[in-house]
Amino acid sequence: MNKTYYITTPIYYINDVPHIGHAYTTIAADIMSRYKRLCGYDVFFLTGTDEHGQKVEKAAEQHGVSPKELADRMVHRFTDLWQALNISNTGFIRTTEERHKKVVRHMFEKAYENGDIYLGEYEDWYCVPCESYFTDLQLKDGLCPDCLRKPEKLKEESFFFRMSKYTDRLMRLLEEKKDFVMPEIRYNEVASFVKGGLRDLSVSRTSFSWGIPVPVQKKHIIYVWFDALTNYITGVGFLEDQDKFNRYWPCDAHLIGKDILRFHAVYWPSFLMSLGVEPPKHVFAHGWWTIEGQKMSKSLGNVVDPYEIVKAYGVDEFRFFLFREVPFGSDGDFSRHAIIHRINGDLANDFGNLTSRSVTMIGKFLQGKIERPEKKGGTDEYVEESVRKLVDDYQREMEVFAYHKALHNVFEIISILNKYIDSEAPWKLSKEGDVRIKTVLYNIWNSLRIVSMLLYPFMPQKSEVIRKALGMGTSFQEVLFDNEKQFYHPDDISRIDKIAPIFPRIEG
RNA sequence: GGCGGUGUAGCUCAGAUGGUUAGAGCAUGCGGCUCAUAUCCGCAGUGUCCGGGGUUCAAUUCCCUGCACCGCCA
Image 1 (cartoon, rainbow, N blue to C red):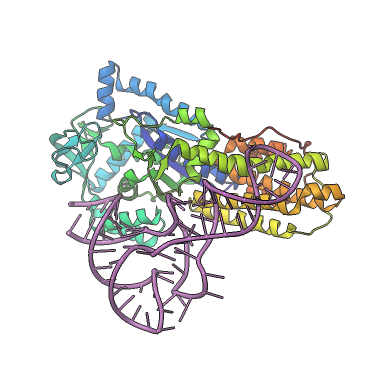
Image 2 (spheres, rainbow, N blue to C red):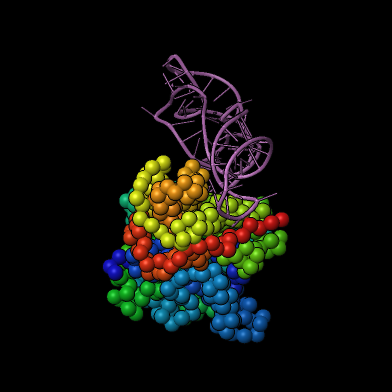
């Protein structure tokens, strides 16, 4: 394998309780990873946890343990969830790991040698729960604009990164690569931000100690972004395994929420420029979920626990819903009603029922075998051509993270198949002893096999079940998209027959 | 305050270098089939395409302006 693909999620703050937002980004990355593997890529998929900072330090104090102990305890909340959600990450990084600290120190030293780091003084308002600094102007009636709690006034010595120096180079990067930031609306935001000129960035703090000390002056702790973002190069072996690093870097895509766009699209590339490392190819910022029409917040108590959704509706159903319901990149609303509606409409009625009726007919009319077509007629040609075209469209959309459009194409195929069955009425062909029934069921079988592959990145488990129901002995993990998207006659499949509903309707 | 976005059927949205009856899904009503998970298929709709003005033979689509909502920045 010589084609590689490297995709990341942000590293999640270890102190957070994982919610639908964390799940969303991670599933999105998993979908692309699985899709790229199908296409024959050697995929590196990195996620992890950000474990430094004042909040962890304070929480540890409260629990009477060391910050590292606390982190060790908390990290399972994420790793367990990724297992429950069927996340196929190939790497997991924690910022407390030695390999990471080494890279952060190296990056700092390099920048220092370049003259990109200097000692200055930092004065601002700091909100502890949000771990964010605000200027006077940003405060809302003297309170933190995010959480409306009272911030602390801080004035301290701090190291600064000379980001201002990189304004022009970033501008050039943006002009040369219009898809550096996706979707377009986010690109525009970043471009206008950079155009306004970049200010130097405070990259150290003396107000807490849980973090990576500045190499030249240990009382300073390297501050969040200079530490956290670095994980993306640590995770693929920077300084440790140069071959691996060269193999995967530059990263194909950093998937993030829109709230951390600036850090990824502006700070991170400028850090890399200072280090003399290529910037990533794409940064994709997605939107936010509201819950039952309301903003998700701890105080409202409406934070959605992904485990509960999975328990209530199923992993694949949840994964599917997130990307079928809303264009990837836009905001969306999660509601009980909406997910049930999707499951019943798209999965049970359209797709599940199509699968059921198809395998039953193959069992009943062809004794569970797929025969070679002998005669064409009706809309046979149309179906095959449509599938071919829609598969191409699907691939085009997947390439640009337009998951919703990709899924739209899949459901277009499903709709065509339901109509095809209706118009060709295999039960009638069977009764009349028309050999074209072989052709019709051959087309349905092939189309369905292809559809299950197209849905595999979104619903890995259910797709395998369907593949098996279609008599296939191999799993999607051993299959190549380009081979599998063809219509072919299978000669070594097991007998196909009626199966229990794969997506039962949810009543009530 | 600066920059950008959005406003189209009951709901969610698509759309047209300006040109015959403006589309899809869902929801609603009626009809059909029986292979299928009371599933599927067909038919039927309804729209001041945000308001106002302009350009044009012709604008919902272009321009200006107003209103509403949203995002980024200060």
